[in-house]
Length: 60
Image (tube, rainbow, N blue to C red; front, side, top):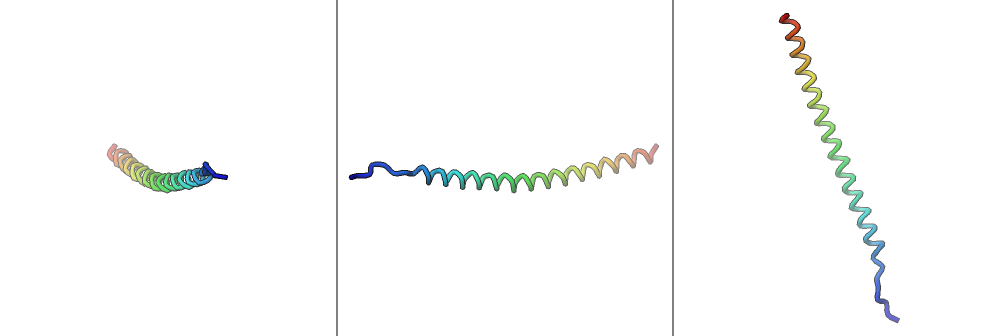
């Protein structure tokens, strides 16, 4: 008897799971950095707006 086929379905499935998992980890890490940067920018903008508002109120 001769085997004319190989069952590579399991190998491909495992590789796809690992690939999707790695991409998911990269997206989560990048999202964390982007969220941190956007919070920092929002804090800086809030500080500038508060300072400008206080200066404008003091001039009146």
